[in-house]
Structures are given as structure tokens and as C-alpha cells.
Amino acid sequence: DTEVTQTPKHLVMGMTNKKSLKCEQHMGHRAMYWYKQKAKKPPELMFVYSYEKLSINESVPSRFSPECPNSSLLNLHLHALQPEDSALYLCASYDYRGNEQYFGPGTRLTVT
Amino acid sequence: AQSVTQLGSHVSVSEGALVLLRCNYSSSVPPYLFWYVQYPNQGLQLLLKYTTGATLVKGINGFEAEFKKSETSFHLTKPSAHMSDAAEYFCAVTISNTGNQFYFGTGTSLTVIP
Image (cartoon, rainbow over all chains, first blue to last red; front, top):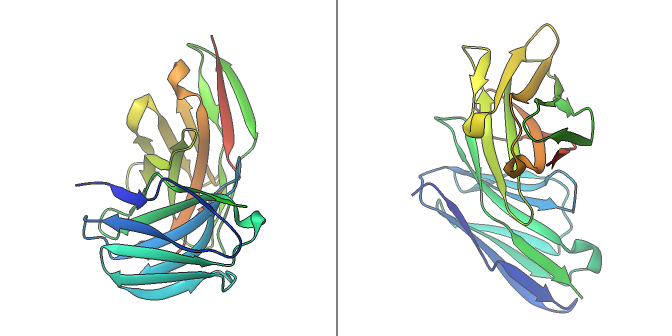
């Protein structure tokens, strides 16, 4: 299994809602990432988990809350988002041995 | 600190023509370099990577790139463009195998003209 899966594929939420994005990989990778990507822009790093511990938090607003319950699963909890948070949210995992980052297909988030 | 510059946010080539996408990097330590491709509404797919060893690396879909330390470049080429190559391409750099942070270029949108 060489893929990163993300659910849901699309999400529309109001500014008062609470929702979660899920990312899963079964490749044994010990680093996982959340990126935010706006149209025609490169991915912007949000969070990095290394061995299930948060190692990088790129000054992301507290309305985004990451969670890494185990080495295969990464969640992003969303609360009180703003319309400007609408974007493609990408999850990735990193293979330390092969020096490769594997991306999931993303969740297209729209905040209304 | 590491950074990546991609010259040309939009590149157009005719089908069958050479594809050349430019990437220059800045790194205070030996870099690991990557090219990714992104099709609309999809995630990023690794095309090829340079870590150590041979400076000419071959990737998927007929792409290759050459690491030139003296020019701090890692340009992506393909001898003959295909319509299916139309996509967004990102160059990225990281240091060693820490896996902590990847620095992406601003991307190049490739259009292939029939």
C-alpha cells in the first residue's frame, strides 16, 4: 500500500461549524504533514508530526487544531473558520529511508 | 536557510517540443531536491528526486533533471512534450533526510499546444 488517503474529498462548512479532516497512511512513515494550498500557489506548510509528536507549527491560527492519534493517522480539527480558510488541504507522509514525501489527494474545503 | 526559485510561472510548448522548466535553489548545506507535478484538484506526485550520487536523475513519464552544484540549479526537462504533461510543476528542496521541512518554489504552469 503506497498511498495516503484523505477524507472527506470535499467539505462545505459554515463559520460556526466544527469539522475534522482525516488522513491515513499504512506505509510505516513516521513523519506526517498538513499543508494548505490556494489556487495556483505552492503548498504552505501548517504542521509537521514526527514520531507522533508535533515538531513544527507554522504559526497557524488556533482555529486549526492538529492531532496525531497514532503513527498511521493524522487529523485536522476545524472550528470557527473564516472564508479565507477555503483552500485545498493536503496531507503528506515522509519516508526517512527513501527521502520521499507522499501526498494525499487533498480535501477541498469551502467556508461559507 | 533554504529557498527555491522557479523562473517562469507559465511555460507553453508545442506538442512534441522540448520541455524545460527552471529551478534554482539556495542552501547552506547539501540539498535534497525534488520535482513534483500536480494535476487539477489532485495532490502532488513526485516526478523525480536528487539526494546523492549521480547528478542526472531520471523520473517518471520521461522527465529528467540534472543537479548542477556550480549553478545551484535543478532544471527539469523532457525531450518531447505530450498533451498529458499539461499541469502545475513544483520544485522543492529539503536538507538531508530530516524530513522536517520542504521548501517549495512558486510553481510553473505548463501548457502544451496541439
